[in-house]
Image (cartoon, rainbow, N blue to C red; front, side, top):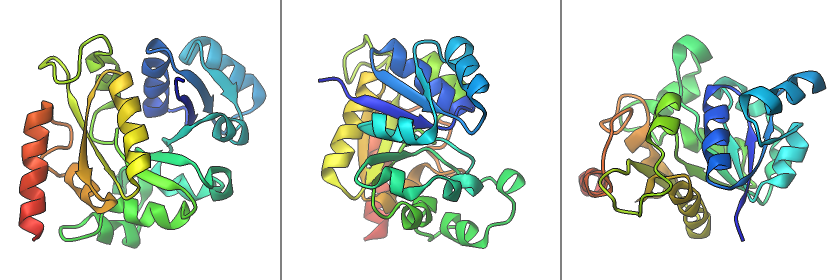
Length: 222
């Protein structure tokens, strides 16, 4: 049975993910913080084919829930809505947008545990997986190749980091379904591999290339 996808955040990233998921045949619900009229407009124009809902509805709808809000607003998402859910963290720390957040700045610095370690503290009841943060929102649609087989050189690879093997497998299936090669890189802390400033961030790699970079990172940590 095809996974249902809930998306919290209807900005550029959330909307792009919604569109490629809909195009690949997923049942998608998307939520924004706006009034009901804006939700209807969102579904009709920005993400046609998606179910426009408030956050609770989108969270309940999704087998996988994508959190695509500005990082400094992640605590405005009710963690209880996502308890027991597989949650994709697409967020990055951008000081010009988020302001100076010492906890995130420390986590994002060299040797830090990565920003998802802080995000996990809020969504402690969820199985958090980091991905879709190291590709530009415009490239999500331009480079999705759902009709190409896994391993095809035409497919761009995306890293996936998470501590729960079942959650990582579920997210990998979704990433494959929307047209990218999924490359698990290890535990959630390995998400530092694809945060801003890393060799993977914003760069296009095939699955073998991304695996080599991930293996090199793991070796350096030993």
